[in-house]
Length: 287
Length: 314
Image (tube, rainbow over all chains, first blue to last red):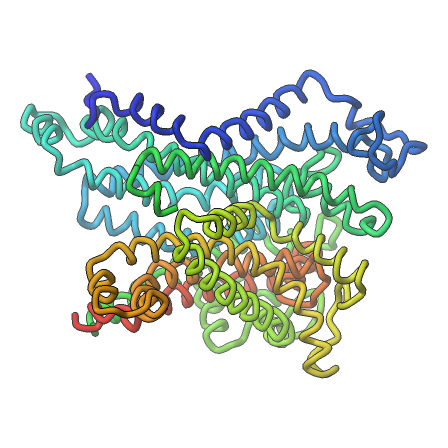
């Protein structure tokens, strides 16, 4: 049986979240971007792998709403497929961060002592490697690619989730219902799984949204410098890199992929802000 | 306080040690034979053997690690394989671009963020607050390299006020060199300033709700004086923490921004080294960057003692 601290914890949270303007706006933007990425699996206005040289560098028009690039590919279609790549990389990276970080944080909180100290010092070491530096090291040895971007961003996410999980769990451990569970003879592991995790899940979800947004930004940066997804797979960062030398002729080539990144990150941040206000209503006015 | 400082110092050194093991393991042990990786598949066995000899790869791994660390500590970073010059000379030359860039960006971001954050906190809930924090929310979402491209388009291509890229070198004079660093620094600083402004505002709003502020106001002090003299100082701890954390983002940002503006800094060096598979350069530069992140975080922890008198008393 799962015991949460407040009987209707998650329902309350959702009710408060939906009352927040920033949460609703963020949710709408995020859903729209996710939908665009999903649709791209079945349909895009044009085939992004087909090069039509006679249509190169066309300005935005009814036929190509966002214009075409230097190979005559439709920019809107490329942004749609690029969304898929950005979301996939950021999502898996958040998964790695949560999958490794949360157990570490829970372990640190449950055991304390040297194990806690070891987890925190491990965090210090990982924090010293910004995602870009990890990506550089991995690329130097294994060559560039989307998988390396995922690993690099994922590694950077680990200490973030470890810290959040540890802090959240430490606040739950002294509570009475945990004492009751311990008195009933439950072990630390089963208490963590049955009681601690459900109580810190919302908090982790909120952090997940924030890390997701950071992941999208990091992926764009990595693919801009050539350490992320490789051509012909379109990615927003790569599109910006290609646009740089053609900006004088066609500034829109640099504007649209950038706007796609800004809108996606903005949507996720609004969602995260609204959600964390709902999680801790005291925060709401401070933001 | 001595115990606090000593504790932080020891943890900082331990972190540095473990980080060096990670860098060494990834770049020297993981590839199997780094010499083969650097020279590629078509290299002759003689060439590979010569490079192995130069890199000391025929020694046992622990000895190689100690050699490398000893070298780093005595500022002997080895010799670049592609440039055939000591890595230290390369680094010195490039730091002269990257460090001023990062420092200017950091100063700019603090100089923008604190007044904006204070302005928003002062007008909490009013139009000025909504507007400045809305702008900050957008600023957080803007990738610095995209912002850089837009700056290049407006100020270099359109208005022709500054160069679009490249670096004349400090020998060409301070002003031409600074001119080449202005746009990159703004591109780096603004997204960071947006984050910092949000932190400053929320920290200030929290402090402004405390009793001592009410007392100061009750004494008849004007609000502006209370805000700038009493509240801001107390709100600084989270701000300093974020400034420290931002250093690592700024450093990573410099690597990307240098590529946007074709600046011959550490970032460009590291990318050229990756393309040429010059692991000797990659290893030293990555270690230097990681070390600087650790040192800055240590300095931030130590600066708490300066900002927060309660820690000094301990």
